[in-house]
Length: 450
Ligand code: UD1
Ligand code: MG
Image 1 (cartoon, rainbow, N blue to C red):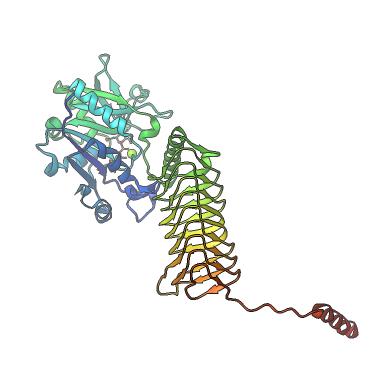
Image 2 (cartoon, helix red, strand yellow):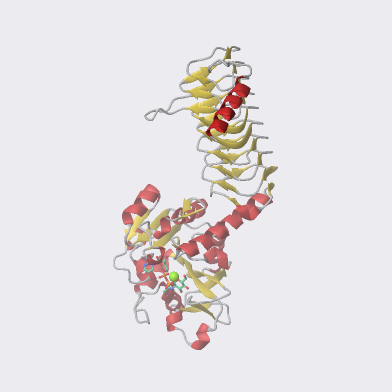
């Protein structure tokens, strides 16, 4: 099969009123990535040579988000889905490949489905391929009228449909693939003589029929074509996205003890034989090697975790936390922008920021890198095999040499040489019998006061 040139159009001129947001609807994130970018990224392997996004209000926001990735066209006023495609004339008139029309608020469409539409058009030479679906509740979706020969004859909008037509269960997702050579010929023939007085994109099907051009239907799963118009639909789509990721990771050899309580980012990367306990949240930019254990209640974002490491429970890894092989990070530990080298242990109650923790270092409970003076951030460097006693404050910038030991409770304000012992705290004094005397005196005083 000859791979034809591909253009994509993403319709996003709708007002998005029901989101009640100052952020453009298509920029609301799913799995940490704006809906619009889900579509652009899903379509990217199909190598579209032209990408056009049709917007109404909020052009600047969309432009700022997509940059050079796509052309942006303003549709003003918005006279319907057909009109929205007509306004891409400057970009696409004369384009002779396939044109895939997507909705910016239908972000979960799979690449396989896009590909299937392209393949079906190549096989059948139909001028229009419509993506249909059969939902549990057909609501007010447009209905697909398929002839006995399997050719799609018309799309009837719900508002314009008869009782019999409303009984059809095969619905229009809105997503379509058109022959670029024929597209504007079909669009130019649209009118707005319908219940909504809009230029319906769906009418290209009947027009193609009159011109004896073929139209066919490809079917998709209901979840793939769900549209997002409100915050609750956004939450539903997030649930679908997360379930897809959970299933994907389990299929790839990751154990999830309670899948429904683990949340992934769109870009989370996880190796094999990794176990993830309940209630773990991944923000963007995390990469986990093989044989890692993530214990319960961890929040992990922008971190790299090496082979065989163990994290949590209750750990927070922030951007640019990098854990080497076999590193152990225990409960109530926060790590930011720090390299923790192979075999190091930070087992309890610590903040490590802007630091390098050398190989096999042991960081005692309650150790804090004091990396910030209110104006600037400073680094801490701990050499291989050093031992930092519990409740140590490392006042950065500071270097601890390899193999050094820091006494518990120290406030370390200057560099410590390799293999030295550094202790920085008040010297302990003991006063024999003092406490007993204190109690006797105090009790006597209290008794006298009666
Ligand atoms: C459309 C379809 C309907 C289908 C349904 C699926 C038409 C006439 N009807 O109906 O058959 O079942 O989607 O959800 O196409 N948009 C613009 N400019 C406009 C109008 C819409 O860019 O002037 C964009 C919207 O931002 C949205 C998409 O097109 O992303 C669909 O618009 P919407 O108003 O939701 O169409 P429906 O009436 O639901
Ligand atoms: Mg709609």
